[in-house]
Image (tube, rainbow, N blue to C red; front, side, top):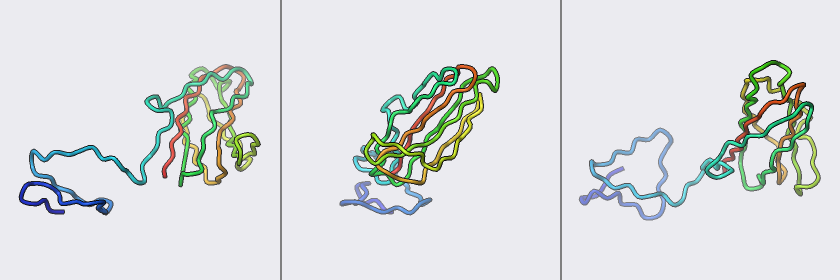
Length: 151
């Protein structure tokens, strides 16, 4: 890509740049804020992307549901912050829903997240809404989660 004699990049509309392409700017070139981004990663929960939840002894806790109808992919970061013993291990299942009321298990697979461990849960099935359901172990623990989606 070349800049004109005034140091400006002659762009009107959008420009496709290949992955890994190099863009060189002259020293002192101003870079304005980009107002439209395609294929961005949306971090839900605004400026606090990590959500902390206490999970009690054998308790069942539902995450907030997420509308994924406009997303091409999505996942969760889940961290079990327990540090004491395997009594703090948790299990979770992913559930999907067409109406945010009627829920069904995504695959029926139970995912174990041992104490002091983090996992990334990637989901490939789509209905309009998704959430996960945590079941606590034999001791209380805290779970940190972060939902991310790409559209």
